[in-house]
Length: 393
Ligand code: ADP
Ligand code: MG
Image (cartoon, rainbow, N blue to C red; front, side, top):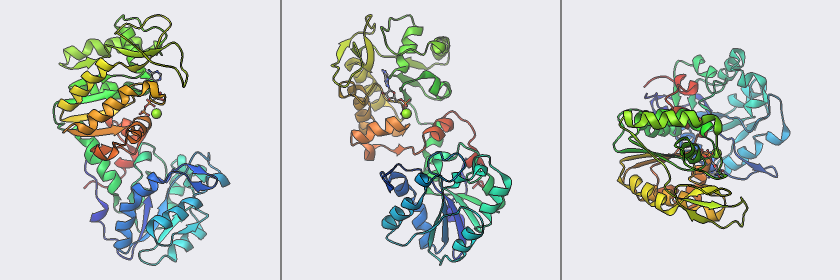
């Protein structure tokens, strides 16, 4: 699983093409949240200090293969320059003569950001000619865009083959180290906490984690499909009717595999979903006319105890509709238990990460994965083309 690290490359005075994930939210032409830019700083700064000439390539949004002025990376170059406290050159082309000239003008330790690579339809098609023209800009390739490694695009995958060695940056190395633990020789007890809105989004992960974890704690809207599969009344809660049979199969498989799947024994419910809805607590069965919107206090306590006893915990998907204060309790209790657990704690998924940030507990979690889709695919045990393309350590 180990991939060649950027530290193993001889980069002094060489031009390095670094694929980063600068897919940040923009507001009024400025960067609204620079988390992803900051996440790339360790690798960028390592390279500039090693006197490499750093050429950065990234996508931003979904321009669908043609230039969209509102999706230019120019504001990102400005923000990056502030964070680095150093100039960052910008090229309004991603490949071609102008890009070659810009890259050629870089001094050792200099940084250049190329325009949004998805302005070119060839990028998402992993076009070999386009990958070759990206490769012509540099002598070494480093990938640190974990969020896009599950996509076989020219700048994440195709380009790597044009270099004798393709290395990973610090962000990807960290993802491989932490997520890798869940696949090979996990510390036990290994508890997986799964929630979120739809069973369909998470089938692969549930199946994969059932094989590897000792206990699955199910919450969020997903829990109602499992409860329904067991024959429990779920009132008007969200149901993924197509997946009731799958839930039945998983529930039947678990004991045969020596695993346990735990489900809510109580809930916070409301008659309607609205910002000022107040929560009522009910037992395992949800009455007609009520919607389950969070796990109840007994469930939260029992899940927290499992989490605190575990040596490895992976969490994906909130326990309830935590965007509404009346239904955030279950998710917050799980977040606190993660922070207090002495085990290795890993969180993936945009909403789960948002919940932990909201609770102010992010710095007490062992690893917060930066790639939603990529981390789920990784946990499923699927091959990620952007990782496969890198040189083995
Ligand atoms: P992640 O982004 O962490 O992978 P998901 O996107 O799968 O998580 O799910 C998050 C969403 O699930 C949130 O918007 C949340 O409101 C919703 N959700 C959680 N529990 C419920 C529930 N009981 N009923 C309806 N929606 C829910
Ligand atoms: Mg989400």
